Length: 257
Image (cartoon, rainbow, N blue to C red):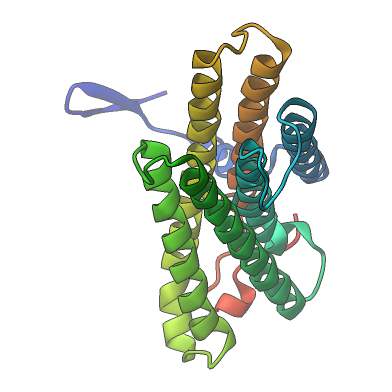
């Protein structure tokens, strides 16, 4: 195999066969297995956050003398909303063998529900802070979290106007599509990262209050963070998998995998 010099590196010149192999690597993983994995991870993460909030943290309440119950709403709604439903919305174009217009509507509705749940979860955190007289927005988790919900909402609103109603011109939709996808991936990755920061922050607070660092609750939270990252990784793999190129957003591959 011949090589060419690029600065201080020697780059191999690939044959046509090798180039085609690299280009087709995105379809090596069985699509049915990937679809099963992402939905299985979604169920696992959802069950884990409910087990943590109910069995270990005592359940939920919008208003209670036990103020910790108010906070418990926050991780459940934000995780299931922004991460789980947000992820399902992102992959709906590729994971559902339906007509394009139906998938677009599902994509829109799931994102809307995700935003509503995310906002309710954030409001629960603010209510909890008000009840225990703790300042708002003093951690990196809260700062990035507010950024995520703001960007998420703006992305949804602008995309609704451009792609749904009143709907922009064909050229506007086509030109905005790459940015729509890029911003969506960016915001989703931030949401996953913010969730992990939230797990770390809450676990740190609990351990300072006497929680056993090697106890079952600590292990549950750590594994929940790991499964959240795995879920987000599979979602990003699906959305970035190879698709037929097209300049028309109505045919932008997002076809069922």
